[in-house]
Structure formats: C-alpha cells, structure tokens
Length: 292
Image 1 (spheres, one colour):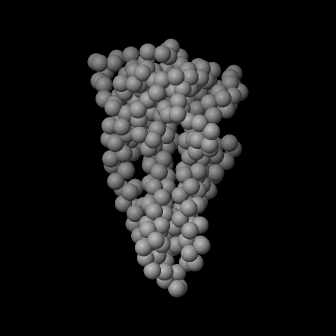
Image 2: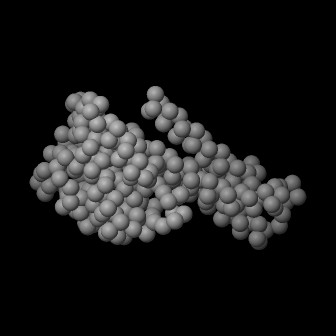
Image 3: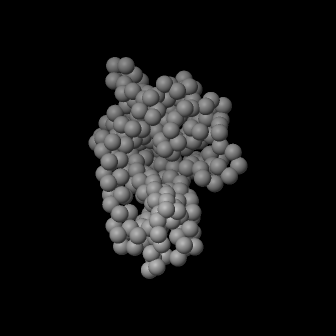
C-alpha cells in the first residue's frame, strides 16, 4: 500500500508539473504558447534521454573503471544487481574526497553506477553494499528517466517564465490576452512551484530506493549508518559539482552550502527521516535473492 500511495503521489505531482507547463504556455501566447511549451518539453526530454548520462558523468568528473581496475567494486555491484534482477551496469568512480554515489542512464541496459573515491575510502563493506543497493534500486524503479523528465519540465516552465517576462517588458499587450497582473503571477510563481514539485518527487524516490536497498541487502541498519556517514562527509568536505547534477547523488553533495530556506528547496529528504524509516525496518526485512 505504501508503494502504491508513493506512486500515486508522484503521478499527481507529475500531473501538476504538466498543468503548470500548460498554464505558462497559455499565459505566454494562448494556443501558440501552449504548442511552444509542449515542443520545448519534448525536445528537451529527447535530448536528455540520450545525453543526460554523458553530461552527468562529465559534471562529476567520473570515469568508467573495468573489472580489472576495481575487482572488489565490480563483484559487489554484480552480486547485488543479480538480486535486483538487473543487467550489469557500467561502473564508474568520481575523484572526489566527499563520500557519495549516484546512478544515471536512460534505462536498465544503459545504466551507470558511480561512487566517489571518498566513499570507497570511508565506508566499510556492509555500508558500501547498502549505498550501491540504493543506486541499483533507482535503476530498477527507472527513477533516472523520471527525474530527467521532471527536470526538463521544470526547466521548460522556468524558460517560459523568462520569455513571458521579456514579452511583458518589451512587447505590446494583446487586448484579448491575459491581464498583466495574471501574467505577472504566472511569471513569478510557476517556476517556483515547478521547482518545489520537482524536488518533492525527488524526495519520494529517495525513500523508495532506501526501502528496496534494505531488501536487497537485508541490512537496513548498514544503509542507515552509511547515510549518516555520507551526510557528515557532505557537510565537512565540499564538492564542486553542478547544481543540476546534484539531485542524483545519494545525499546532497552541496550540503555544506545549504542554509535556512535552502532546505525548502532540498532535492533530498532529511537524512534523519531516512535513517528513522530504515531502522523501523530492522528485523522485518526479507532479503531478495533473485538472479538475472
């Protein structure tokens, strides 16, 4: 039931993003503006579908590593992906001291699991398994594609807001178009609302990935401990990464710079809440033993 409710909430939020896109397009130029909005979203999704993993890997400075270069890491990923019923993903390492990890790729057969060097240097075996299982859970849930679509929709809404602002400043008002006050409200509020919805969807997917990771390893406490270590590392060790790629990381890699109202726009749920849910699963998890 919890998984069904989580998916229902995500579906409603996606519908909200689509409605905001339509509203921004209509405010910009009626039916022509709506067509433009849909075209922008479609083009953006197509581009991100094929090239998002390349852009993300470049943002983190990650490189693909072979089984010969990192045998223990490959073996761990291979064992856990079999339990998850997934094809073997590409394995990569990012040269950052901050302990963190992310998954990217357009689908299960073009997926990448990347860990930072700091993660390998910091965590013990059971904690590392929990972190990798979490990223494999994102792959199994197809979260990378979902987050690509939501990011593209939110970006399109933001771009339409900017276009609306310039058209209001430099264009002549169409008497049959929206009232300037309504246009101003759309211009200011829809991009903010889109970001809040995008980040809320991201937080929902993190909770679901934690739950499946606990099933894959059978050790929710190990993942809870790993999350606490990652949170502490993110606050202590800065990471130079684009804010657009930061939501993919297991904990917010920009946590060291997050202050005050920034928490409202967080792409990750509070680590304490994630830990609490994982510890509540202790003793009640039946590990998955599936084979690919």
